[in-house]
Image 1 (cartoon, one colour):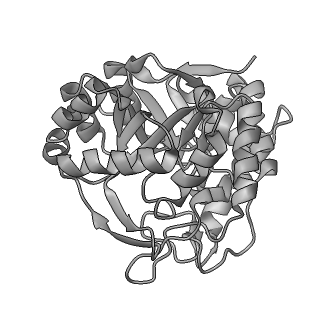
Image 2: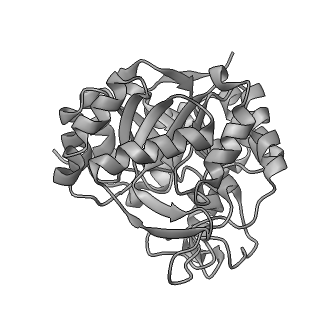
Image 3: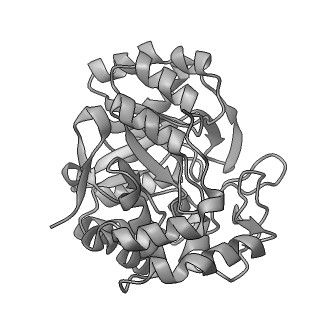
Length: 332
C-alpha cells in the first residue's frame, strides 16, 4: 500500500513522496549566462518517467511556470493527458521566462500577474485547475506576499486552484502568509538531512501546513553523485544558494559529511538516496519530499521509498548524533 500524507489544511491526500519536475524542463538561462536548468533532456523519457512514477503510487507532481520557460509544464501536461484524475498538480508563479528564447526575464509579484500566469500554466498543463498554486519568490517581503491573498482566494472561489502556498525559507514570512490566507495549505522549503529548518516545522505544526521539501537530495549530492556536470546545468555555475557543488563537482567538505552518515542512512538495505528520503519521512508527519527525476531508473529508486517508509528510529538517531553540529537550535 502506498504511503500517503495530507496536504495540510486543504485535506488533499498525496503520496508521501512527490516528483519534482524542475529537471525535465530542460535549459533556462539568465541574462548573465547563468544556467537555471539541469541541461538537455529527452522529453519521451520524461513522459515515461512520469508514467512510471504514477505506476509506483506517486500522485503529487511539482512544477513551475519558469522551469524550462514553461517546457516542464508542457511535458507534464502531455504525460498526464488521460491520467489527470490520478495526479495532484502543484505549480508556481512569480518568475517570468520567455518561451521562445528560454530566458529568465525577471520576477513579478503583482496580483494580476498571479492570475494571468495561472491561465498560461493551465494552458500548458492542459487542465482546468491546479491543485496547489505556489508563490515562487523566496525572499519576497511578507507585506508584498500578503497583497496576493485576495487574488489567490478568488482563484479558489472560481475553482481554478484548490489551495495555495509559498516557496520560501523564511519561517516568519510563511507564518504571516498562512495566517492571512484561509486556503494556504503548504510551505515549500529547502530541507534535507544536511540542512534542517526546525523553525519552519514549528510554523507548519502551528498552522496545519504541509512541508514540501525541495532539494531533498541536496541537488544530487545525496545520490552519491561524483561526475562533473555540464555547463548548461545549474550546478555547473552554482549560484550563491547552491552550496553543495563547486565548479560542477560535489563540494569536498559536503561530500565528507555524506560519507559520515552513509552507513546510518543505508543500514536497512536502502540506497543512499532512499535513506535521505527516509530521513525526511521520519523527520515530521508533515513532510512531502519532492526529489527530481528525469529517467525511469531514477523514478524506480526514489519512489521505492514509498514502500520502505521512514528511516528506522535508531538509524535516525545515529544520523542526528553525527550531524549534531549542523542542527540549528529551535527558537524558544
